[in-house]
Amino acid sequence: MKPFDFVQPRSARDAVAQWGPDAAYLGGGTNLVDLMKTGALQPARVIDVTRLPGLDRIEVAADGAVRIGALVRNADLARDADFAVRAPMVAEALLAGASGQLRNAATLGGNLMQHTRCPYFMEPDAACNRRAPGTGCDAIGGAWDNAAILGHAPSCIATNPSDLCVPLAALDAVVEVEGPDGARDIALEELHRLPGDAPERETTLAPGELIVALRLPAEAAAFAGHARYLKVRERTSYAFALVSAAAAMRLEGGRIAEARLALGAVAAKPWRARTAEKMLAGQPPGPDLFARAAEAALAGAAPAEGNGWKIDLARRTAARALAAAAAGTPERMPALPASPFSLSEDLSHA
Ligand code: SF4
Image (cartoon, rainbow, N blue to C red; front, top):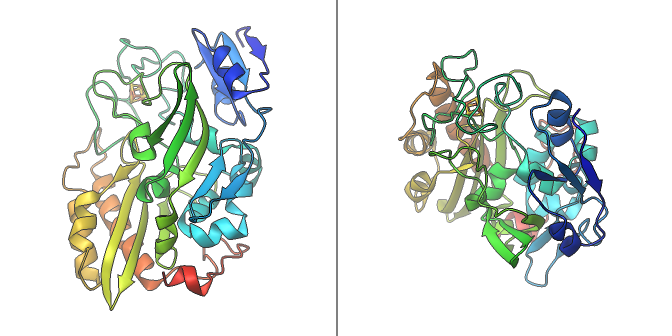
């Protein structure tokens, strides 16, 4: 491993001040350290932010909005009973990701900032425009077919691997950042970038900006009674998604008053399907409607590298997630036998 400076600031402001060329913030280390070990990433300075005070809290505001500190561990957020009641599909996505050990270490901020799992990105000897701008893209014509089907470019066909970001995008989460020019908010949906001609710019964060918290608006709880995250993967645990879908809806008088739908592992960012959401609003739920909405969600899809199968899989996953959401959030998540999901009356029928 290449030698690097290691600093442990005691405040977010100090952390930002420590930023410099080739610096990296370190949270749980479940992604960055792996990439440093292989040599795929070689930061000159590692800024350990795990000691920053006050970023490990889950706080509920008077209006019902939830603020989650960037250092809250994935496992702690998923197992927070009050949070699971307010945002069950976020908890479901968290528990669908990685392994128990990794969820105990991984942080919210780190999850949002994790890199693609494109195997050529992780292999330092491979050509990769995202890791080494201008070198090319060995995934094109390579041996990896879990590439993007939406929003990809000739420069890069990678996907964002996060489960967590998918329901967060659907629920209009907002990211709070501190940076050299002060604090600002970024809609989660705007945090990750499509590759375009600059795939090395994975997010819209400016150099040195640090995620300090994430806010879920109070309105997110209105979807708690009909919300599911469905992840399709090659094995039932410890695997990244082939495709995933976060689906939620508010039902009123037997019709869908409002719907939310986002897809995961299909693009370099969580993919909010707003056209499908509009199509669902005002309609009585049913399989034909869900099939048409899923078709609309994938309308612009194109296979990147022999992965046309992903388009059909994503369509079916979206339709199935919508059907599962319409059926109602279960008190116990089938994929999570130990999870204590139990919806209170006021939230489940809001
Ligand atoms: Fe790199 Fe993107 Fe090509 Fe993968 S798909 S090798 S991340 S440029």
